Length: 84
Image (cartoon, rainbow, N blue to C red; front, side, top):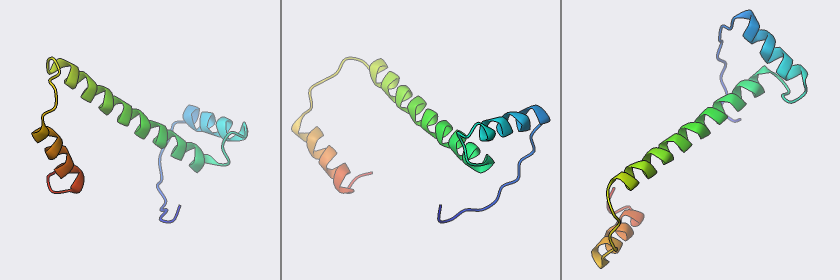
């Protein structure tokens, strides 16, 4: 990690013990690795939840319609960055 800073957190003893056990198991090299892995897993879960929401929104929007040439041109413009 090129730009790392320190963050202090307070944990109750049972959670501290759990983290220590996970590190002692050898799966993680240290507490920071364990916490970083938890954060990455949470980020991944949030992306999945967002994607599921978008799929549900699409399904609820009604039956699909065929793309028109104007639709395809709009998508190309978005891909080029001409439209946000």
